[in-house]
Every structure is written in structure tokens, then in C-alpha cells.
Amino acid sequence: MDGWRNVWVMALTIVGTLTAMFSWTRIFWLHLRERGASDAEVGWAAFCLLLAYRLPQVAGGLLADRLGRKSIVVLGTFGMAAAYAGVAVAPGWRLPVAALSVVWMIGALQWPALVSLVADSVPEAQRGRAMGLLEAGSMIGITAGPLLGEGALRRSSSLPEAVRLLLFGSCAIYA
Image 1 (cartoon, rainbow, N blue to C red):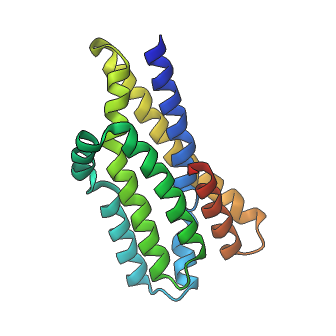
Image 2: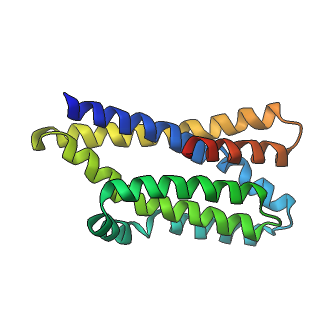
Image 3: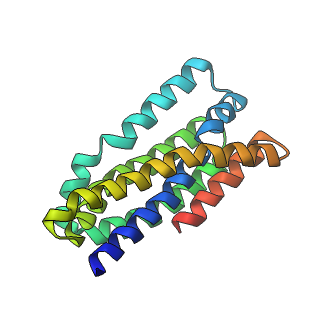
């Protein structure tokens, strides 16, 4: 039963962190436009961020094997908190995209360690169920985040204020 507690803790943590991570995505692109990015530049920024979100996973698996899975998760989580603060205060539109790329790269580096920690928490015959629970937590966070962002935008006096609020909120959740 202790292993399933780990799975539930990780799944619920993923719900919270991915809700935070995706809360500002709906409005971030508008924010970049307000800061002077063209439509093409916003498109390239989105492309770069999506690459940063998944490509570093191979390196993350290697790092988890060398440095330890828990170390990668803990160090990465605090690194993401600092990078989110950087996104919130960075001037212009290029620096926020660069800082956000760092956030998403760290998340990609963490993912293999998180998955393997969850897999090792339960007996082999129950790993499919554990992975399903972790993935469900991911999807809940990814889909709930934009709803939270839309609510923040409606309650804020401006788009930049909403984006800053959501990014500092993400920073706090990761910290």
C-alpha cells in the first residue's frame, strides 16, 4: 500500500504543477504580441517551446541514471521555480521565451525520473495502472490549466498583470 501512496502523491503533484504550467499558455502568446513579437515570431516561440518540452527526455533519462532520480526531481523542481520567476520579470518578449524554454527543458529532463520512480513504487503487475494514474494526472493538469488562466485574465485589470500573476503562481507552486 505504501507504494500506491507514492503513486497518488506523484499523480496529485503532477495535477498541481501541470495546472500551474499550463495556466498561462492560453494568454502567454497574446502577451508576447503585446511585447512586440510578430505573428511569425510567436509561432517560432511556440515551436521552440514545444521542442524544449519533450526533446531533452533522453538526456533526462541518462542524468537520472547517473545522478539519481530523486536528485533530478528535486533539483529540477527548484530550478523550474527560479526560471518561472525569470519569465515573470524578464523584459521584452525574447527573454521570457528563453526563460520559459529553460523551464520546459527542465521539465523534460525530470519526466523520465518521475516515471521510473512511479514504476518502481508498485509491483510489476500493477505498473500499467500506476502509469495510467500518472498520465491521468498529467492530462487533468494540462486541461485545467488554461481554464485557470482564463479565469485569471477575467479577474485581472490587464493581460500583463494576469500573466505575471500566473507565472509567479507557478513559481510558488514549484517552490
